[in-house]
Image (cartoon, rainbow, N blue to C red; front, top):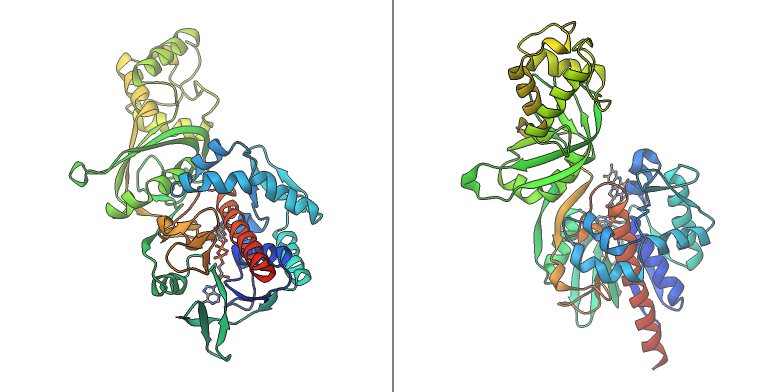
Length: 420
Ligand SMILES: Cc1cc2nc3c(=O)[nH]c(=O)nc-3n(C[C@H](O)[C@H](O)[C@H](O)COP(=O)(O)OP(=O)(O)OC[C@H]3O[C@@H](n4cnc5c(N)ncnc54)[C@H](O)[C@@H]3O)c2cc1C
């Protein structure tokens, strides 16, 4: 007997679960309900309209290190359907994914429309019935089946249900009503608001690699976090991969501390205050006639270096020669270059909030099938689960992988049921 499957949420995970299941077992009826008029909105806006589909990291042990929550659970799923497989999947659809120097992978067209169009076409071809502007209001469990209620449609009874509602509160409410615990949702991947004289007038300046360490008031008894990567100075504070990674790994601690903390930036990772002072002394010795305006290392732009000089050399003019610098000045510079302290005041309020930490409790899901361990016939995929990655295509990879597992299991299981 063929079965009726409902997938709630027409984002990356919803489409991929529906396509996978429908290809695996075309005899079932597949309904994909999307609340908005335009499905795949996040696919379309992601990666600045280019869609960062995945990351060119094919070593699963390394890949999972990019997931502050879910790393352990994703090992098995990534072995079955990881970045290699999604690249192949899109290649089979005629879409080549190209890796950039930092590992992020985009469609060769550099247009997210290519990805959205491919998914829409594949879903249609596989016989998935897409309902746009169709918000599910309530889900009730009746025996082994689910009854879906809508605002403008008659209720619908289905055999299996896939929840792919991303970070929508209503999706969490559905999961809760069906017996699941929701790890409280909290933002991840945000910038830090910092007002500091050093950062004034420097927006847009970046450094390719810094070491950043975040700690909190001792009474909070929260762990310390450290990350390395590029740093970007913004109008409101700090951003860039090093900060976004910190915000993701420290998401829960930051929420506990009300987004306040102490940030130490080592602008020269690998150097300690001591070894940096020795380096500066050596530079002074080798370049006695150079003016202070001349940065001792290429990583600093003239503008950024100028800020170090004007704030931390006791107002020495930029024409001052290196040879005249006192030991005390070199010591202060070395300290600021390797342990520059900033106070994080708030999380950035702009659109950098890409994902939500929290969601359906991972322990309540079978990661071989993505089926609920609590409510048989109920599946989860994508951001609704308490899994999130750092920036770079890792969040979409989670959506593809978990959706593929759910779709595959539904397809195979229903085919076996039908033949028995
Ligand atoms: C601005 C931005 C840029 C991003 N860039 C990247 C990137 O470059 N790389 C990367 O890996 N990740 C990126 N992400 C994260 C990535 O977009 C998400 O992790 C991913 O889209 C999650 O997919 P999903 O299908 O689980 O959820 P979503 O894409 O959020 O889809 C959920 C869908 O469910 C629908 N829905 C909710 N409730 C109901 C209901 N009751 N009835 C019917 N439908 C419902 C919603 O309308 C929505 O369309 C970005 C996110 C944002 C916001």
